[in-house]
Amino acid sequence: MKKTILLIISFVLIKSLFAELRFYREDINFTLTDSTFTVDGLYFLRNDSDKDFKQALIYPFPQDSLYGLVDTIFCENMSRPDSAGVVRWNQRNATLQTSIPAHDSTVLRVYYSHTLLGGKAEYILETTSAWGKGFEQAYYDLTFPKTITIDSLSYMPDELEETETHYKLIWIKKDFMPMKNFVVEFDVKRSP
Image (cartoon, rainbow, N blue to C red; front, side, top):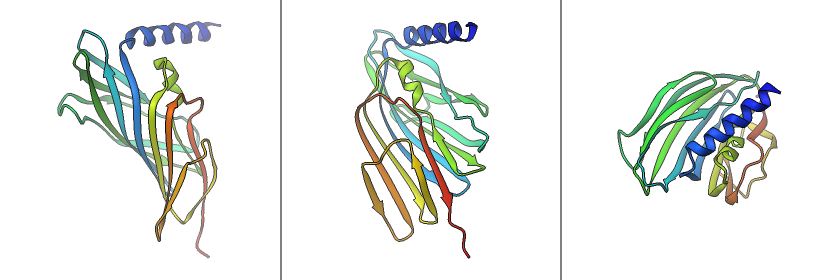
């Protein structure tokens, strides 16, 4: 019961804090190898208020026994250099600092690498619901070598591109409210 009440209070605080901040789009390139999952994403934010937004944002990392260490994380503001960065991070989340002037928008680029201990990779999408609205649009792609076989995906891709050595799966979403995380289960082909 205490956990439920705390979750409700947290959700109300997040909604009121970000009432005028709109996370309206994300474009993310995922790269999967047999032992690493990298996320390189552009996050589009809009400040509809009369006040400048200067706040820390929490960027969560997935937790599972098949995931190793998160490393090589950075954040930059593509619209305003030197106005964003990683304040601190641990294996659960990163705290990102950014600022957005009143009635303006910005694009943050966040990159991190996650070591994999088994055949599963994940990117957290479910927290989008805390913002109160889904994405106006979203783009995701997943690049992986042909030595990897995909066993399951939480979302079916819209397109497939192929090179001699790699596959790229592509998702294009409009008015997208994620109800589950982006999860990839895979197997690595071993040479005989």
